[in-house]
Amino acid sequence: MTISIIAGLITLAFTTLLTIAGVGAAFILIPVFIALGVDIHVSMATALLLNSIAMIFASYRFIKKKLIMWKTAIPILVIATILSPIGAFVSQGLDREMLLWLFVGFLLFAAGMMLLYQSKQREEESSKWKQVIYGLGVGAFAGFLGGLLGVGGGNFIVPVLVWLGYNPKKASATTSFIVIFSSFSGFLGHATVGHINFQLLLFTALGSAGGALIGSWLMTEKLKRQQVKLVIGIVLLGIAAKMILNLVG
Image (cartoon, rainbow, N blue to C red; front, side, top):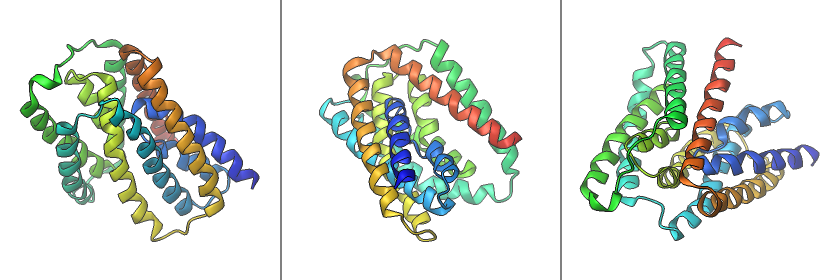
């Protein structure tokens, strides 16, 4: 019971922050759960399911606020789903450690761009077909590289959309919607090899839902465009730092 409560509180804190950035919290919750003594397969299945739960709650607010760019989100979702298995297949013949170092380099570059680069904001409604084209391109990029590296495609989608000139709030909200499906797909894969600890799931699901509601409220009501961009940059730096520790540890 104590471990489940602690896990729920940690989930609440990280989900709040990462919902603002449009990135699921699974990448950091998995090692936290393992450190608390939870089986690795249970940790992975639970964390991925929590991603979906959090992003469902967050997306409800984002939809009400009309922040999700549907003409970009749907092409990204479809193409990423198709190309992710291809990326995973190609990765079998490559040095995964080298690929992960390249990904770290991308994250550091993207974080620097979020923190320092000022892109010209795009008027989404004036170029609907361009939204579809950009969605196809971003989906191909994120899906293939996500599968190649075995990491969440959301880590690619948010910075690329911001680099293309989209409002960081809309980039974050759009990615949150996509994460629902990619995380649930991953959950189904891991759930087949590990059972679910329902006590852990209960407390962490409450933390995940609460964090998503708080994070989405902060993002839509309290934070400005540049502040959201700052949060995204800090989150990307955090992901890069964690990956570096894993690679050198």
